[in-house]
Image (cartoon, rainbow, N blue to C red):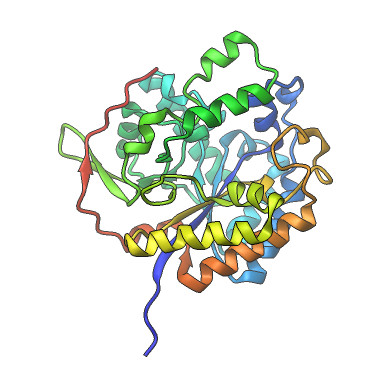
Length: 323
């Protein structure tokens, strides 16, 4: 008798070329240079090959540009779902007022709906940014879940490394001082739970899964970096992460980014980004290996399907105030 596999969900934050340039502090991002016509066909073809459907978190600014509509619509036409990744993709979203957050969510939501024909009901903050006000806005707008939390202790190290590689001014670094979150993110649960507000309303949170107990990230970007040292080491790291998930009964929410599948041979302007020295062909090879290992252990679904099968009992009250 075959044993039914636990479910795991796969999502991709569709950060565009300009958004990487913006966070890095590069000139010219204001013209919104894009690689969507390059990366999306590659991603959609490999997902078809692997027979996997996922959730794409789309940036509203990209959806608002008419020339992007055809390629963004292909996400839904090929069986995937879309989520809201904010309008301006600013990783300091938690510093916004509640009114500005609501405007950000609504504008992105409407642009994504116009571009794809599907209205998003899930959200992930850029740079894993979130706040009490954000969660309340999502609940008010009847979102099914938030997916902004990255429970890891190494967030400050991730931020410092990014700053070290950037050309940001002192003022720009100050505005991004909570990029990727703080050390305390590591104390949040790995398993899905519900945020509970003062009015007894609740909102499902599906954190990006990190390795149970150690809270080390193992989403595709990290696997890619490890594979550049040793492919065997990458496989071992992923298999151990999966083992820890299974023994703790943790159903993974596995995260992808466009640059996990394309290198500087496709986007030389982003050669500054970690891992861009790896050729696109090698990135696709590593991605397929990781997906096949995940498929061996889990039933892979999109995030809404994953959310519909959850019944989390744990509740938490939001504690993050605007920065």
